[in-house]
Each structure stands twice: as C-alpha cells, then as structure tokens.
Length: 225
Image (cartoon, rainbow, N blue to C red; front, side, top):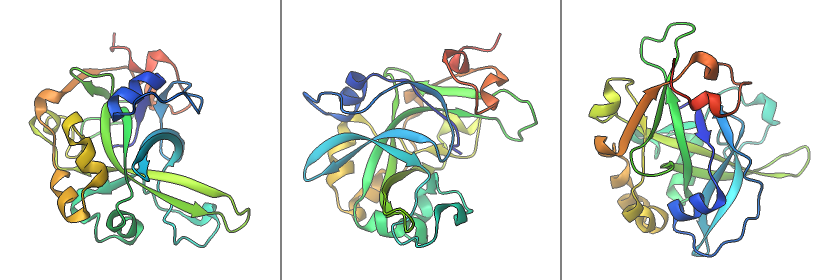
C-alpha cells in the first residue's frame, strides 16, 4: 500500500492542485491510468521558493546508493510515516526537507487479497486527484553519470473510510496545508503525517483489468460491471 496509481491529469489540473500560477507545460503529460512502482510519475517539488512539475521514478533511490540500480532489490515506493525519520532510505531526505506532492489517485485491494480479485479505485470527493505527500531524492548513476530524480509516497494508518478496505493509506495534503508541507521544518511537518478526513475520499470497485500492469487506458478506472 499504496502500490498502484492513476495519474490522468492535465497540466492545468496539476497546477491548480499544487498552487502553481501561470506555468507553461514543460513535460509531456500523457495520461497513465495504471502506474506501478519504478515507473514514471509527475510530482511537484519546491526549490528556491518556486514550485515545479517534474518527472520522477516512483521508487525512491537514496542519494547515497553507490551500486548499479539493478542491485537495489527492495521497494521504496512507500515510506511509513511512523518510521520516515529512522529508516536509512528516507531519513536524510526527510531531515533535509525534500518533500513533494504526487497528484495521483490510487487502487487498493481488500485484505485478505485473493488472486484475481478486482481492486477499489480511490479518488477525491471534490477534486480531480489527491495531493499525496511524498519525498524526493536525486541519485547519480555510477555507470552513466545520469542524475535520476525519484520519489516515494508517505503512508499512514487508515481513516474510518479506508479501514474497511485496507490497513494503510496515503498521507493526503489539503489545499490549505500546501505552504506548510513545502516550507515547514521537519519537526512541524511531521504533524501532517496523519489520515485525512474520511469525507475527502470516494471509492468504487473496478474490474480486474487493472491487475495487469501492462493494461492502460480509461478502462482501468471504469466501474465494475
């Protein structure tokens, strides 16, 4: 949790969700209806007091990682709020304030999950996508010298709505929390790492079409027959 997402948003929608004003598109926002860990997402981060939409790998590569990427055998697309300041993969990014939002909706399978079960599609009640709280880091590939931007979504205990589906949920940032999320010191930002109100969420069961990560398109988010 959360291991599958939908990011079928326009540039204008991401700008509105993240408080960016007057920004012209700089990357291709081709919709992706079935995002899995290690694939590319769009995030919003703030550097030098300016927010920007950028592409990133959804599976954080710590800046201190010195080996070739194929040797990284563990998943870091999620970071638990309870241990984000303790685990080596996330601790430095958290303490340095490398926070971002990932505008994305998500899929979740009920527990216990059985093979072939269809998931729920979780989406906001009033907005085009959630502002998922995340961390970013930059890693330099030792073989090519390429600098890779990557990210993780932060998860927490579920609210009442999500507890009927799963035992974890993403930390979701409200519009009025954006400035604090980007600018607050870690000892203050940690207070935002909690479940959002249940009324922010809606859900519908979709088909098992989305179970295969190769499947894309609007069918991924259509209601189950």
